[in-house]
Image (cartoon, rainbow, N blue to C red; front, side):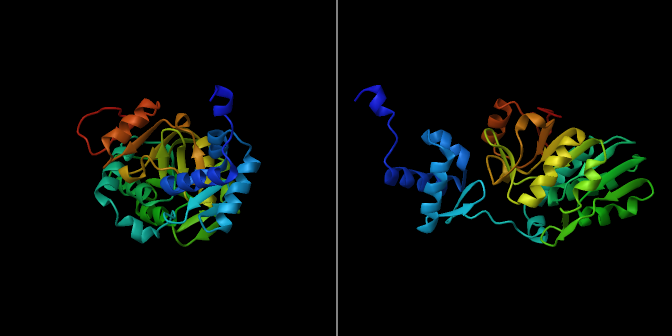
Length: 274
């Protein structure tokens, strides 16, 4: 077999079998990623995904396909709060240490960013901090710091699952400010796929928070590392760094090799400290 014949595309049925296998193993695969992998147009890949979805082999979503065996489920805030609490607390303390008096701080919605808010409350030396958030939970937690802190809530449509505010209207406040530092939560940090999130309405706001701040940090416990989900917040190089805890060392090494500064909040050493 010569090189030219070896590069011939797979027959449709075999290609769809391969695609179903990839989606099943990865949990979520983007249309563009499959198009590159199989050297075909995105139109052809979309047709394949629609065929597989009709057969019940994948779940079709905007931008790609999800595994029917490993659906990505967004857990309620209260349920997520109980998972990995020690790691999230360590991240909160480490991230809060980056804030200085007079800073404007964007705090994204989430259980890990809520731990940052609680850690900021313990920094009694901080004065004149402005916190802008789309999280009702964080706003209420910081209420006791007023007037030492100024707390601005974005407004928008309430998502009860996370007690978050999203569009319409949520972008108005974030579009009108330039923050000193932003802490962004997510459901996936991957060396190739960047920083991602399972929920699209919140993903749009996270992306805006990143662009409106001078420095943006990802905050994610170890379970999020190596994962990739539907909504793309941004590539790794738009972030100042990642603050994590409870992480597998191989996944941390892979992210550092991809150029991301990683601070492990549960380690005593200062490797990769942002």
